[in-house]
Amino acid sequence: MHRSNASLTFAVIAALSLALSGCGKGDHDHKDHDYKDHGHKDDDAHSHPPPRGGIMIELGDHEYQVEFKIQKDLDVFTMWIMDGHAEDPVRIAAPKVEMVVSQPDAVSRKFSAESAFGGPPGSDPIIEEPFTITFSPIANENTGEKVGDTSQFDAPLAELKDLTKFNGTIATLTIRGKTFKDVKLAYDHAKVKQ
Image (cartoon, rainbow, N blue to C red; front, side, top):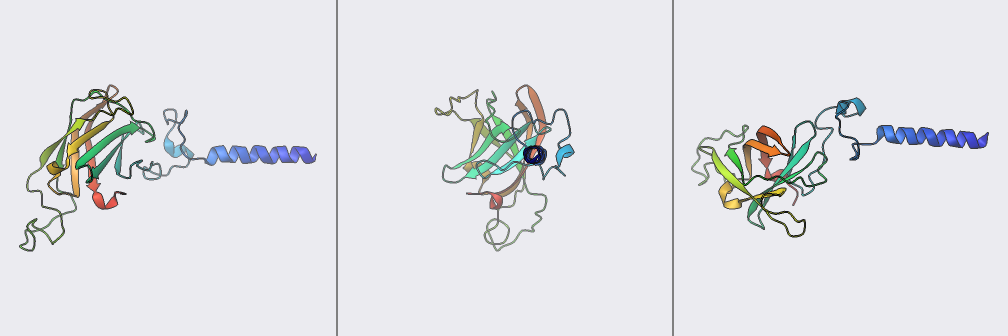
């Protein structure tokens, strides 16, 4: 009798552990159910931390993640494409990726003589007109990735004109045959982990 109580307790603990566990990789892809069905309350509750500490956006219904990070030490603005759990790189064949950069929606500054940038000292330049930056595919000997088959794309940091907070829009991004349109990024370098 004592043995069956222990078995029952173990079974209950195991069942609860499975039911309460977070989003794991494996067969947990949300294709057969809504992620909210097992405890996720909203999109923010079901997020994955960016592996490199950048700003991450989700594409599709938990299909892919794209991480962006200004890497001042390398003088580049980098974009990495990953699976829906931000664990594995996802290679694409794009010869380039273009992003239109514009002023953050929340920023509305009048021109000020206090700074050459048009805002308070230490602020970002004001973006008078949206402009386009170009991410180029990056080869990586360690992973076997090459131009035309890579998950990493870099844009020269100089193209951002010293901006650390901006909006970006990629008109189209095709990953494994699926095209995502108007991919939006709200970048704030203050939220990036170094």
